[in-house]
Image (tube, rainbow, N blue to C red; front, side):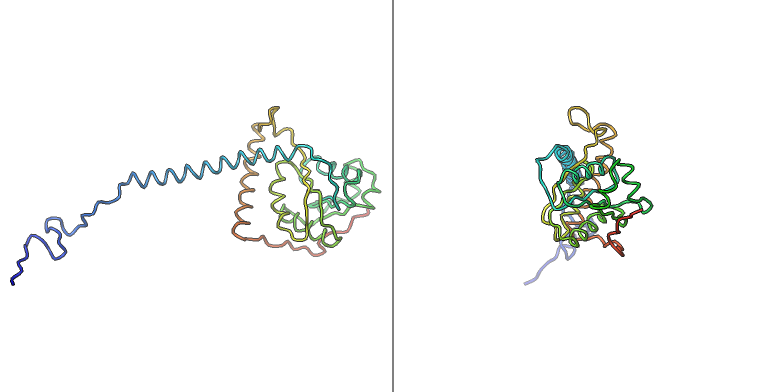
Length: 240
């Protein structure tokens, strides 16, 4: 048997006139662009929807909660009225002791008593001051160690409304704490009368939402933050 090969075709079966190029049609570029556009749009929609839920959560947390007592109270510094709220809770018997976390090292108990117009006897008997924590991660670490040291499991957490969701995430990873009751200090300048963010409030909430998402991603990936260099991790009360 004689096999005759047409000289117009090479061994791969492709025409010589086509220079050996693959005849299979390439995927249209518009399909790739469409897929990329849909991916970006989906991610943007997820972020926008998440931000809307975040603002609703902030607004909900700032509403008064039913009375709930706890072992102790933790106030995170950094916003107006937070310490006043915490001291009011202490005086009303909602907790046996108060930790003020993240205080500037140059601020004494006497200064805090004067600024809040509180009898210093309350600071002498029932208040501890943490001068170590420099951020929300540090606040949670210091509060957890303080609670463990004193045998507290149920805490009331006081911070600003926009800061509360991220603070709860950080406190949730602290072992030994059984429950957290949030008391969010409402920032009236963030909200209009119909509970929608103002212009300045929108900018602040967007910034805080970015930090909130980063905290959730860190937790999802199991990337625990490094512990702070605590030394004597809860400073003793300055009696000056």
